[in-house]
Length: 333
Image 1 (cartoon, rainbow, N blue to C red):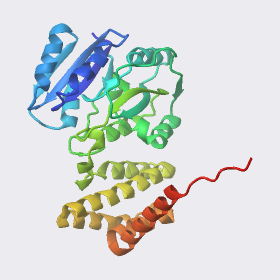
Image 2: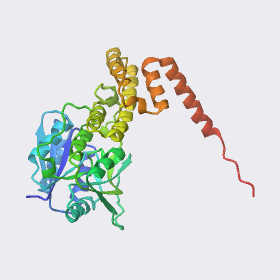
Image 3: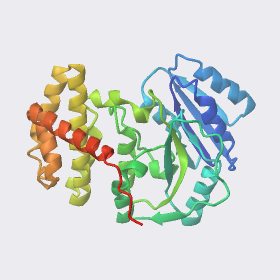
Image 4: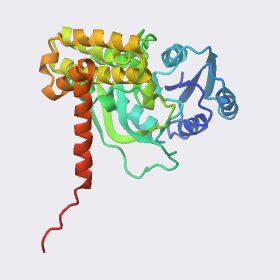
């Protein structure tokens, strides 16, 4: 049995998949399998993977009809044979020490999850700093939940996470969610209060490009864009964790606002109507009153008073324009 199963969902990434695979097979940790799930690609991505599998038997390719990234990850979980699973997107890369360092920390500290920092880049990373070891910390119990809720950008993304297979059990990604399916998956794991080891070293490299999963403005034009945040908010509210629920209430109204503006830009009147209906219900939520006044005014004006929202946007734009034109004064000698 392989120690680690690296799961890579793949869809039309012929420009990046070779670079991604190179970063995996260049790991200092060798005991792994690389599970690539092709989700109905129409470009040369599968052929490129096949070429790589001929030179490295650890790379295994499975193909399925296009069903979405969650379905691809779920199939990867069904096929994975490792004691640990590691998630990697097909247009991203990882530092050559990441797998070895993660599994060593997990075994030393008997941890369930390992997480590293992320770097967002438009360039291809060709060289990696390796001279200094990463500094790892650990947390568990209620504090591991707090770590997840208060470090959303690093903690709530599945990329770069190594997870014990027995912690996952029968849990799977929700294939009905268009956005935040990885955050929801991790949230359900965090509710078990696992022991986590983490480092702030930026050893996971998110490649930013127009079609990347982490840089798609089209997500906001889907009325389910904010569904994950609402579910987590409601879950924490039911559990009596008001401080965590408030964090997700703020995220919910920001995402709802962004979704409404995207739908409005597209001229989707039906979609705008659905978001406004949900926004009306949002105003009655007990947590809404605890959100900062500025955020509430922005949200309400966006949904129900467009002229006021446009005025706020113009004033904000002029304010920052004015700041950028102010030249710093030279200090007297």
